[in-house]
Image (cartoon, rainbow, N blue to C red; front, side):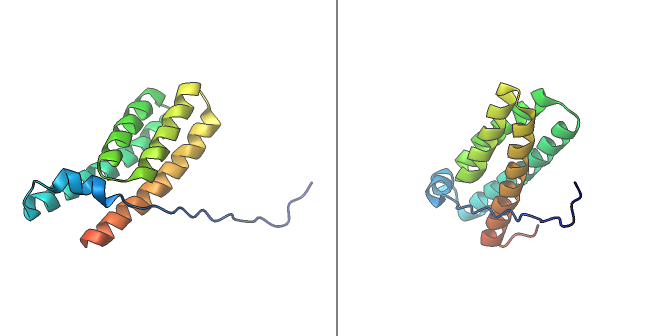
Length: 128
């Protein structure tokens, strides 16, 4: 069988930030401290997503599991529910030993993470 045409399937993800969750975290901070806290949290999310990719490439499923669990908690606190769900799905696939599922859900986590981080950076006017 010969394949003449390769069709690329576009992936589109929709993310919404839960401003109420974020508001709870920053309501008792002065504006400068709140902005600093959100900036640090966004940087930490970016670092954890990068570490997920590294752990996967290295075949270190134990580290990947730890990272996605911490990513779930932090993204929930920041109101990034789609990112938290994606991280939870990766964790579930690791738990069941589903390598294909882990690869697929990790790819989705990376896409959702990228969109989520860019959304926060756009809202805050931060540079990527």
